[in-house]
Length: 72
Figure 1 (cartoon, rainbow, N blue to C red):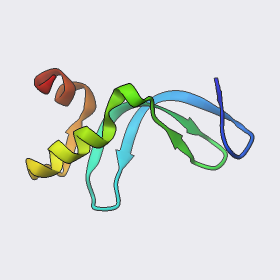
Figure 2 (cartoon, rainbow, N blue to C red; figure 1 turned 120 degrees about the horizontal axis):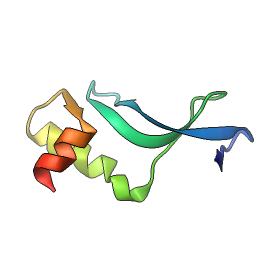
Figure 3 (cartoon, rainbow, N blue to C red; figure 1 turned 180 degrees about the vertical axis):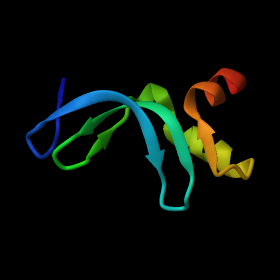
Figure 4 (cartoon, helix red, strand yellow; figure 1 turned 60 degrees about the vertical axis):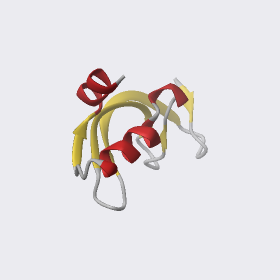
């Protein structure tokens, strides 16, 4: 378990990450707080790098597990 900035515990999950520009990355491993909705990502997921590549390829939705398997 990991503590959230709000003081509650965060749960480790695989879930969808939605960006303001409409990009959705599915099945991203991350911590999420059920109380306040805060998300925390391990730096090894390289979520921003994946989002950048998805935008370059003009994708609006990608599966994290498939995307990383194909490109890394």
